[in-house]
Length: 476
Image 1 (cartoon, rainbow, N blue to C red):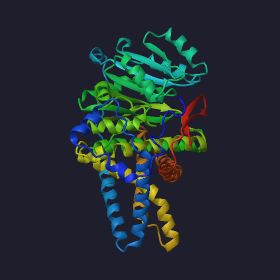
Image 2: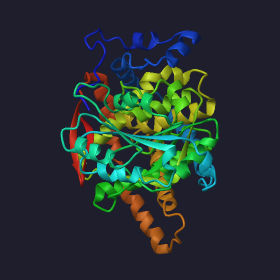
Image 3: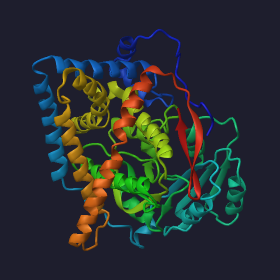
């Protein structure tokens, strides 16, 4: 992927975050036309909006410490989180349709599988062999590998594999091709035929029956996309990979539960499937965002599509194996997640998103971004006023909910196994270790939200070497 493919618009303009926000209000007709435009990227004034949010977070946190009724406001926020947490815990996940039978394959839809690859000589051959040997009619799916100007042996490997598999198509991008992964996917999309578009990372490992399990979820006409549960292939390697395994289990638990209460299902990049009509209605992949999957998630929900979740079979990927690699990767995830709220805030608040989804989204914005960002001014006020952090009740509930979700998620991925008391203790230990691992988000989120508001974007791609593969991440 090219260096510096995203930069701030007009970084030298006068700092005016309020005007940046107010200037985005438009009438409904203009708003709809903008949303439908293939060129809508929603990135105007990101840095200003991030700065305004940071000032609001600090101002509100300090203000709550200074007023006598601040504790009651925090208790109200805590109560809202508790109510939402109880809804999640008690929700029953939606039933998963049965995989396609041999008879049903006759009428199965055509599927296009896409992979954007850069310098993936260690893993690309294995992925192509997996994708080209699925238990799905070869005349009903195609595989597209986009070589994004690799400088290793990836191009030669792909050209040789294309001679072996009739359904494999290889596209080589030049050095000056823009847009990163999103640009690569958008470039090949017009060449594909599938009613459903699947996207994988180069290190993905999938089971042969994956498509048979995914397709039935799209029988619901409101289903715009489906995310397959992610698992860590090298989970047993060390503390970091074990933590990522627990994190993926936690994510799958919340994904299913949020969907069950009418909330937000989210795409996770690797193992995502999108209905072509939904993708095209939403303007395809955004080439001006760090995390195309999270950006597309918001636009699908704003267009009233549903995102489903498939628990089994999963898609495995290689977890990062050291703290530095994790820092780079999670910084990218955190910034991409925050970007989408800055980009689409007025559309999220508009009537176009249903109340259930809006409540769920706002609650998780509070849990994932606002509370961790408020931890810094809360700590400062704790030291200066010699009192407990004012947001400690809300933070305690969030950590408890995370522990419960992680424990339940780790149990559910062992579905079908008879768990003994010793097994349950082992799951409990995995949960404690995973909770300790998850504390890195309390450093990353405040760091990212602060940096986005004061430092102009200067992004470049670097390589984080894994066992048998490399993974793209951002260096700041």
